[in-house]
Length: 269
Image (cartoon, helix red, strand yellow):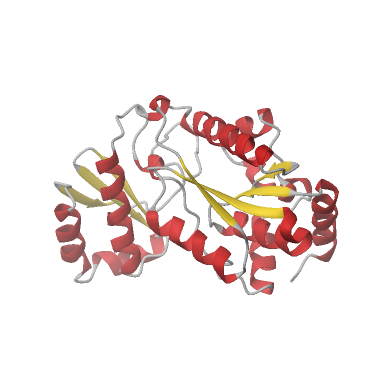
């Protein structure tokens, strides 16, 4: 089902903006945002992807491929990990969004765009998302939120237009795999990325490898736990993750869930 009235509202919002720079991660929400913005505004819409050490390489490659397939202009901004994030503080998402979107506003203003927009959807206001405060402070626009378009509707629109992202699982930056107030280093981030990619290639679409120093805690969808546990996969997975530097490999019997490293309140991850 395509939600016609909400789509009309979205188009009116974008048309009124005149020109937009879309913060583009390659995920479900931002992919639809740049697709619709480019469809409506043509060359007055452009995708900007910020690449940091805590973004998975495969995710960056998928973002590039999406824009190439739909002939959408894309600019990659390379940024190092800021020193304020090196201990993975509890306000990590707020700090990160503030740093990244300040830089994005600076660049896109120079490029002549009226607004910076992101893919935050109407459901996000009901979730624990400390980064939303940073977006509000920096006056980043969220057209899906303004048009009251929820996650399911974004997937419906995406499926209607045949976008490959319509059923893509949620993903988040690699910092969400490390407990708060733990030191972050590039080697840890890379082994987490490679471990998750191995599991994805083994057939587990929604997966997290939570890193507790030398222990890897694997989360998959609860329905996938029997398949992972009762097969030849445990030995293969254990061997691969130990090759990557983990000494212990465990399967979390609660399965994948958002914010499992934050026991006090849920944090999207």
